[in-house]
Length: 223
Ligand code: TYD
Figure (cartoon, rainbow, N blue to C red):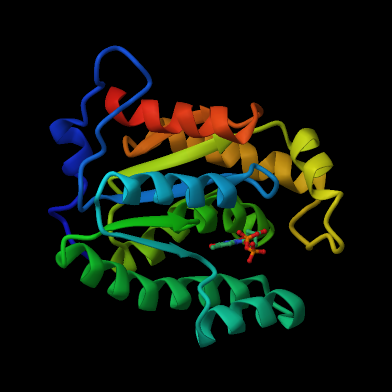
């Protein structure tokens, strides 16, 4: 969507005085990814708050979105017969969302997004493997490409799927993607994405949230 993006982080956030404090550039697009139970939503919220406390204008957002398209995604998760239906719904939701994100960024705001294209590449490459084999990832990259804003930083919160499932077991209802064998495959796919995509930073998410946030914040200066 916008080929010129992806340069802000590369221009260099700086680590200040050898502490875990980093300066995070304004107007950046920061995405948080990870398996269910990785604590991603908590950390994304805390990161956005911290960014705002430095005086930046920040939009915090998430996928599936809280729009009519996000509603259809959730409905598709429950009702769709074909794995392709939910895939296309995630991508339709993203197409609208990306247009909004592009507007926010153009206006100079920073955007903190809880799940984005990495979720489709990681989760749907597993669900579509039955149909497309190992071509699934390449196919998903191709279909997503025209509807993307390139993230400046994608934080992958890495956690053992068993630990993640343990965290989720406190929740009333376990969603269909929250099964350990499935999450293992998704986690492996995320690891692969992190090695292939230079926007990724990988942070160990097994520590308490305050510590994970410090690690995320600190990692911004080391890219
Ligand atoms: P989640 O972040 O858990 O949303 P909520 O907090 O509203 O439940 O996301 C819901 C599920 O959707 C999660 O299991 C991951 C899955 N998902 C995909 O499979 N592909 C995608 O592209 C996205 C955005 C989410």
